[in-house]
Image (cartoon, rainbow over all chains, first blue to last red):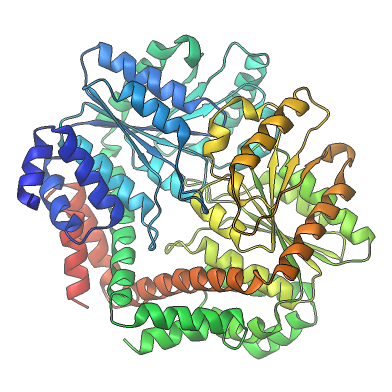
Length: 313
Length: 313
């Protein structure tokens, strides 16, 4: 299939074409750029929802229930789960496979896990491209779910229209929760597993943390309580998401945010391109291996090694 | 102070010189490369311990207690806390400031938080450089503590001699804990807050997860129970760390691991260097802003924009 054909098929929402296109951007295929050039002008219609929080917060269940809620309203929902590769196994993910088997049966829900980190990094770039593909393919909502709170995850969540941070009762115990750096990216906060003890305390702590933060857009993030496993609070969550979406559309802050996102994306893409241009030169990869061995043996320092590679280009 | 003077001072362990050198690598100063060329040949004596786990697992307390334990044995300990910047505030971290005021009073403990992510990324590179500086400065142990389980955090932990993953009872509830991708990087596992309910269940779940994983080096990671706030289990943890350290030194797998680390580090550094060379060209930054605005307005796609920047170099 040519890229033009693939693009045409994905733009009308063909599931297999969508999956194939995402694989292309994920693997950094040579024609991924050409594909994205066709996809990009068709984006901008979906609402992009980023959902993040610590492992164990119940994000997957929450995302599943939210997707079902939207589906029942007649919408099409795309879900991208960002999951840094397991460094040894390459990241086969049992949990996601199970989810995909259940949710994936519904033709109005597309779920995909982005687990592979290529040689050149690029997971964030690939994720943003995958979101654009789903947007262009006509999904009404695209939900990006990130595991963990690492710096790339934070960047990814920032590219969403609405960012949701999921907490659980009891996490406020620890100053670590503040340090996680996720407090200030949440447009909406969820206290999930709200049937557990300590909800009120977590809520109070969260409120006082939020009152300390000052957002440039003056938005006060709502706090929603959910019990995803029992399907409770999902409608409230959807309303909170809508309210921020409407707020930011009105505020005109939208273009500033889009500019910041575009700039970040451009830098990611540029960095990946520059490195791949160098690595694609004949012999560079072998050279890199040899230099890495010198570094490992301490006969050369990494800075001098980089100098050598750069000057030999 | 010249770089030569700075290097001399840090190599004899002067605290202010060490702090200054770390600031240089963190900010990506022009002479950071020169500094690291002097530092690098003096590294390789410290034991590098990576400690990771979810927010709320009590990593900070555990690291503090472990540092005090080593200090009481007459050792010098360096601690690097990796903390992705808060995207809005730039990441002032109350908790760490408190810790630094307490631990920092001791001249045998150096603690530093790496929170700033530069324009070009580079937090992982800066962290690895900071660890090398402490190693060269004569610290016996260097502990790298990472918040969260993002992909950069995983990479950073992989550069340690011994990686410790911290869990808390109850986390095993959720398949998310498996997905976090931290299971397979742990050489040693800690169940902290072991005074809480559910320790046995977490231990059983962890044991069965570990029995499924197969490590290339055939090591069976020990599971240590601690209650860091009450200083319990710290000596057991130190023994578990020593046992893996001895195992991997013996195994000869050490050079393979060091080669993999050196290669990753070289790629990080190369990528940063290539991007900075482009951005330092006159007018590139303004150009980037203008292109980002075109992308935000959807009059250009990011791939074509990158093409323009690359071909104009």
